[in-house]
Picture 1: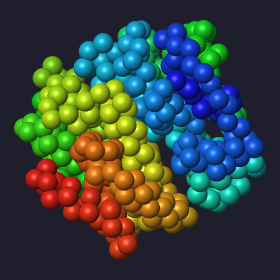
Picture 2 (picture 1 turned 45 degrees about the vertical axis):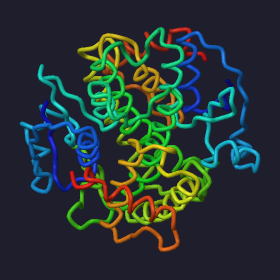
Picture 3 (picture 1 turned 90 degrees about the vertical axis):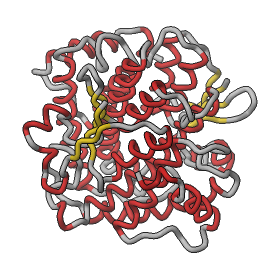
Picture 4 (picture 1 turned 90 degrees about the horizontal axis):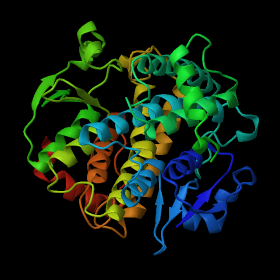
Length: 209
Length: 209
């Protein structure tokens, strides 16, 4: 297997942490997003959506989209389970992973891509040009704050985002929380449960993957 | 099991079609989104995110988010498989389902919610107030058109969205295609493969679920 990766980008980091938790070694091919390598003719063949991560299998077929890559790795390397061990646990992990993506990561992406100076004309990931919308950046910032509140509430009764066990939802939430520094938002001072959770997950060896 | 539903909304329709394909009968509780029932104190207990669908299990626990509900139903009622039969097929179905969600449904949601007269102040689903952003509605419309092109390309070499077999990705894509009528966009005349696919999937009995 081979992972088309970018060391500084949030999405491929989700896969790197996921693989590290399972102890899987994957060959990495660095794509220089800052230099626009994702738009090169060569990379468009690998992923027409012009984004990383992409997992290439031994037979040359390719999987894109983080939930699909992680689901595949979970099936091929089941232990430790990062989606849970029962249908109910798996539903809960996918539910929370989806909430973090939709309410957290997407809001963060809106906030960042619609305001960063280097992304003028690239407010959307992928090959389509899109002008920045300052109002959307502002709305994204507000939603990031709102979602920190939602996470604090969830973590007040649970050790981890999806309940009693570390799961894919914690990986996505950790990447989200670190990503918010890019727009100079920090975990609220009074979010004690979120801060306790953040200290725990960010000190796992996988966090540096 | 019990499904909190809304007959006219796109997201719960994905679950209804998924269940119909498997021949599962689920008791339905209609939530009147047009009247704002999702914001009632009673419904906030059921789902603090104030959206449907919600699947309530016999023990009273609840699953929200379409990918989580469908994954649960797939495990409990494995046949016919709607995620595929091998790790590779499942990765492919989840990959394409994610693409349709991210590039299709979310763009459509941006286009609709940021322009519909009845949704002023409610440009986001959920409990948080958000003003409409006309520029975002326009960007959403453009992305819907772009994604129809992406689907046409994918369906030029495949019978179904994720490959040779009907899957959850077709359900999401059908709901997306029908949803685009709400903003008066139709499948392009010259998208022959997309039109062939649409005729096939929309004539399945499950499409009326």
